Image (tube, rainbow, N blue to C red; front, side):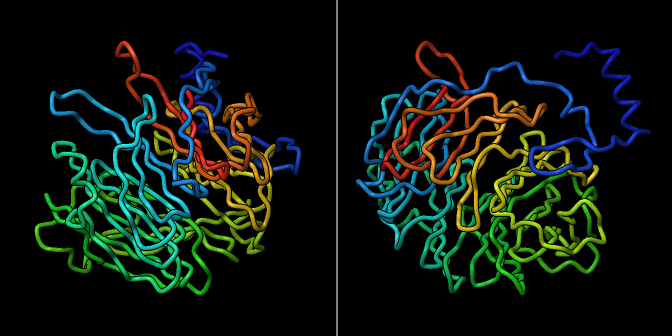
Length: 399
């Protein structure tokens, strides 16, 4: 349904003074604090149709992770590429239109996660190494295979399960099963990153993401802050959010002061029971909703302004040994999710909490990674694109 301006203003006033009660779910009754964002249903313009399939995307090996890279061509036009990595230990880059391979960079071990900010690609690997690759669209593609474009970081002793750039591009974070998280900072105008903090935990970090704002809005203080690398400006205030195994809380770390705060994953702050493990975190494009993929056959949507659950998404499967992969539709109204032991991608409406579509019949093995972006297709049309990576050795692009 669509809301008039008068209805939106009325809802805003109600939200300031009213907490909504119990709402039945398939798996439990959960308190829900409704927000205006959740009230408004999307227009149904999510991805539904396959337009390209890249076979043997990782040299015939299982594909584990996928991401998008956007760049400007020599004549100023924007191009979108799809990146993937997996058991072949390569970073592979393909054209979105036609699926032509552009380059391959050989790395030291199988890739577990990818994240891209501007022209910098961060790759986390099974041997505990993190590679930062610079993509230079103005140079010939063959040069992308030269080692001078790599920064290899070897600060972890076990495999790095998650890697994330901050939205501002100033910070890079890595989470490893050596029970540590590293925060790196990039000098202004430089490519390379320097480690500024290592955080040790008593339990294993499984996932992380950043939430950025203007200086002073997030927790923490710049008083007595540790020194940042020289020539680094504080253009934004970033908070790193870490999900841990065997913990009832998310840990939020201020990237300036490194002060920590904890967000309870249960309905009540005093409840320390570990109900589930967060295995992947994804922040809505607008930044207000946090999607928490868990090992209990459900995803939790949390409002980062009220710190309350607003939705439970529970039609897919994700058990103790599963590896859920989720991402937001660029409208922020829908969520794409894989499902354990299925070759299907579930499309959830955040407004209703229900599955509105299933992308099926194309992959022949489980889907391991999902990612979204925009791309310019034929005739200059700009469309939202979803990439899905599968153990059938392929990557499929959907519009």
